[in-house]
Amino acid sequence: MTNSVTLETNIVTLRSSNTVNELKEDIRNANELALLAEMPYARDAGFLSAKCCLPGTREGLITEILDWVNSNGPEKLLLLLGQAGTGKSAVAHTISQLFDKQNRLGSLFCFSRSYKDTRNLLFSTISRQLADGDIQWRKSLVPIIQKTSIRTSMDTFTQFEELIIKPSKTVNTIGPVVIIIDGLDESGDRSERAVLLELLFKRCSEFPQNFRFIVTSRPESDVEEWCEHPNVFCKLMADIGLDETTKDIQRYISSRLFHVGNTLDDELDVDWRMRLANRAEGLFQWASTVCNVIDPTVRFGVTERVKTFISGPTSSLYQLYLQIFTNQPEFDYADYLPAFKRVVGAIIIMHEPLSIQALQSLLQDDTHHTAKSIIQPLHSLFLGARDLHTPVRPLHTSLTDFLTTSSIDIVDNGQKIKTIVNPFYIDISDQAYFTLACLKLMNDGEHGLRFNICNLETSHIPNQNVPDLDKRIQVAIPSQLSYACYFWATHLRQSNPSENLFEQLRLLIRTKLLYLFEAFSLLQNVEQVCISMKILADWCEGMDNELAEQAEDACQFGYEFGHVMMKSTPHLYLSALPFAPHDSFIQKQFFDSFTNRLKIELG
Image (cartoon, rainbow, N blue to C red):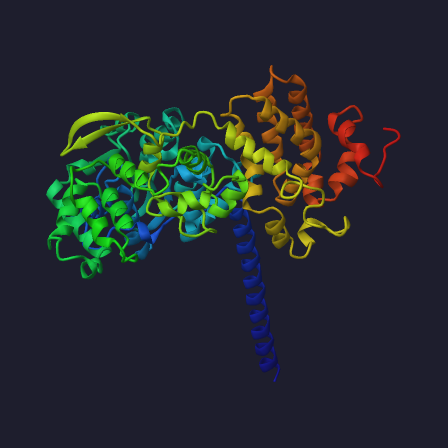
């Protein structure tokens, strides 16, 4: 009997011990995940299945890359170089998909001009993705990111050294670990790329032998310089034969326009798909854009659209864009081009894409040429253009290049005929009109920043405990207002001064400043206000020194009291404002505007 009781007691004790251990493990995992979640991460830089190669195309190149990954060669990095539109990104996404199915994909990071603020997030994003897929990497990374300054760092060198190199020294993963970086040329200009190139190409040899990096880029001169480096295996898209590429493009066109043949008039030859493929001259992006324009879902006029692209002289990608833009019904209107450049210019300079509806609200269009009327007919060139609520961005980087190029070479069969002025050229060096739009929206009495924007009922409840606060923020600070608050100062840096601009800046600082702090206290990012104020102070120094001093004062106020207002937004007014120095701009400008507030008599 005693032995039986002892046995049962031991079993219960063992089960309890297992339960406690499991609970400890769950808590440990939860803490690790919480730390990882605080690392800067680019959510819009990952895999898109729509970008993969059509099955049966690019097979030779893909096989060669797979063989390189599985080899024991000395090169740790494969550099795939190709001109715009040659299909580099499609190859990168296809390789990513193949290795993901084998659980061998460490990370895929895609640079994009449409998401400019992801440029400083490369290595932190790669490390987080590696931690998601490899428990060894996660266990190696977690002790490193215990330190807040490392965990949240936006410095490229720190991220590489602490979040990539150090964890890689302690992992012992079997089989290849593939890290793919697409569109390296879009990571910034030559000076901005310099550190990134140095770290990637020179120091990739420090990784374990089974790590393989695949990097795609246009053949920019500073990137091409690394082709002869011993760490690098360079592959050129131009080395793929034109006949092979044309056959792949024909397969692509046949797949995209499979149902078109049933709607075409008899006057078209049966080999019209091959004729389209030949006119692409090796550019998949040309073929993709033409398929978008032909659009088999719109049956009316499809024969005429096909004939447009198989007749006449061959054209470059830029000539194709020119043809599509000039064929717009409203092109001949005198006021169309200025409106076009205002709307499309906003799309190509934005740091994060907005929907058509949000863009219209931000630009406050007051003509019949609205963002909707301009962009929706151009759905063949802009992603998200068919829907009012989907973020809109250029379909391909080459479109942005076309729009920011002042002159175009007209070619036929590869031979230059003449050079013409690009009527759709957009000068993005001065972004004052867009900065002004951001400021006007923030200053707007009805749709802009305002007191108690989320209708918080009490100051006694911390922000984290306010019911449905996320929903309130989404309604009260919609995407266009959020964008204006985050990026007005970034655009100000590239704006020429004007009296209208200074008028709106003074209005923001002298009437809406506390409401700007309020918005960012709700968004848990008061530091962003301080960054914007520092940019403003630097920009207007020597032109309006008083405004510069006020911006500096606002910056100091944010650093001193940001933690208070982010914990409970109402305490921006109840605690932070009363405790601001009596001689500060914030105190002098805003204190008497609020009643029932604490007043400091002494101290």
